[in-house]
Length: 102
Image (cartoon, rainbow, N blue to C red):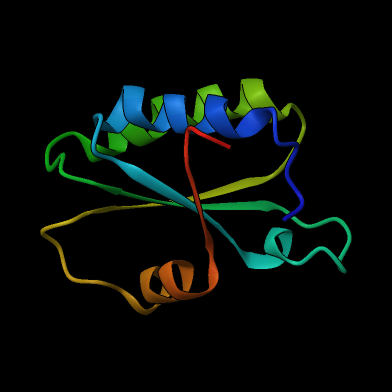
């Protein structure tokens, strides 16, 4: 995984601050492969929040930009009650779930 380990608790905290304590986040895409270089930061969030998802997503993106600086960040958010899109399935199956304890 090509993320600075010090950023992981900050990412998880920002996600939970915006999407609730039960929200979960996965890193997926090229950043999960140590043999690759570069690439944007792809994050997938699952939440129980159903309302104002766009507002929460925008706030989280601003916080992530503070964490990562000048990096392109792709952020997919899915309220758990909504159906899984193929992108969400890929993120869950091939991604790495980020947790506080790392």
